[in-house]
Length: 108
Image 1 (spheres, rainbow, N blue to C red):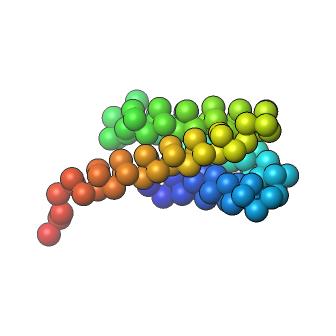
Image 2 (image 1 turned 30 degrees about the horizontal axis):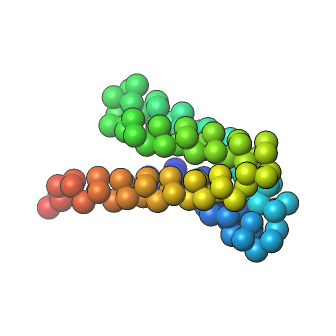
C-alpha cells in the first residue's frame, strides 16, 4: 500500500498545480510521475506473477492511469480531463484497498 502513495502524491500535486493555474509545474510533476507509476504497475504485476497476493484490478487501474498520464504529458490540451480521470482512478483504488483491509480478519 505504501508504494502507491508516491505516484498518488505526484498526481494530486499535479492536479493542484493545474487548478492553481500553473500548468508548467503540473506538466513536470506528471513527467516525474511516469517512471514512478511504471514501477508501481510492474510491482503490482510482479506480485500477481509471484503469487504474493497481487490484485489484477490494481494492476489494470495503474496501467490505465499510466496511459492517462502519458496522454496528459503528450497532449497538454487534455490535461484537465486526464487529470480528472487519474484522480477518479486513485479514488477507486483507495476504495478497493479500504474494502480489502476491512475484509481482512484481525489478528489478536
